[in-house]
Image 1 (spheres, rainbow, N blue to C red):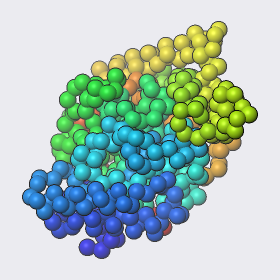
Image 2 (tube, rainbow, N blue to C red):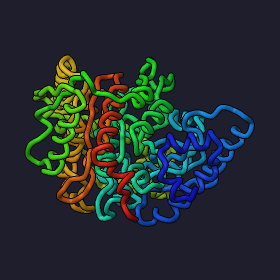
Image 3 (cartoon, rainbow, N blue to C red):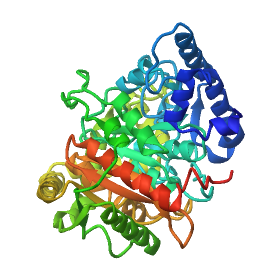
Image 4 (cartoon, rainbow, N blue to C red):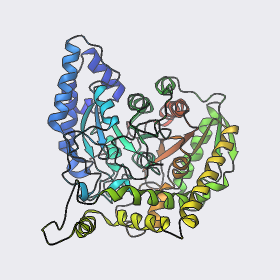
Length: 499
């Protein structure tokens, strides 16, 4: 097979060909490294490419196969890892100058699980600094382009991971989702992204932004590929105090047996209206009609607290970030500014943070510190937590009536790089549909549902499931994907963007 054929394979197909001996893991890895070399100068999906490490992992897979050892379901498949997970011996910057050049001495639990499954880690992907953003424009190392149109954003904060998938630089990727940072990039790049139930994937070794919201998850080009990756990275971790000690739902089985027949699917009235692009609503309505065709019962839902989700999120997340980022003081690790003998430790910390943190990170730290300050805590942070409880109650009531909820993933398709850079509120609205799920802690997926007629850019369909019912995402997602491909073809696999 030629390199151009290899990079178009799904992860499941790639693993099958490696296991059968039709391809070697080294051949597959070299094909993707060649693709990165050919196109990433334009896309800027990667911050660091670990060529030697990736080839060493690939050789180890081929040696296992030669010895007759059984290979796992993703053995030898390349993956792009968001630069928020610590990786021993490989730079981890979180998109920030304050960690420029930092080499972690240990692997995150998620990284360990990928290596144990013989997944080949190609390198670390670009992201909004400390995962704060919806466009990957807040990276200290420059923005990433959307492979559908390099003048457009690839979503955020995990735009590097989604762009790597959409440009065929990797068949799998890892993202993190605090307010939509897996699902929103998936929507605007025509890929699949899943936010598992909070606590289902270990956060140990994942640099924290907002600890009660952050969740790592799988990114791929198909629902089955996402399920295979989900199964590898999920599961209880005693090193993470928020990790759920329950069996991983049967996500791969669900993805292989997709069906919505007899399921009740909820449509929330709060997830449409002013600010939604006409083409996004058109594709969403077509998706709902498709679900009905496939045998689902559509149920209208009213979740009034969802209108308050954005406001609550932008008090809770900055408050937690102001606490988490206090550890970056320029004294223990990472960048250090002003340490010339003429400044006190306090001054060095101040100078380091001034030079190391970007504008959006500083904005959120200031907002969070204010919300937590004496005299304001109850009025702001406390009130936001009460709204969070109301949102969870709305979800609980909804899931008494339906099995899953569907919505547009994001109100618009990809906007131009720089278009919202000076308007934080407009930028925050990109996560309007995704934030309620993070506040409640339940599971959600975005998968492509066509192209908007106005601009021919991808639109995402969001599926939301109750806590630890992640398998429902894959059951519904696989059914929709199969029906969609049969009717209209896959927007990415059939009409790949030209680079």
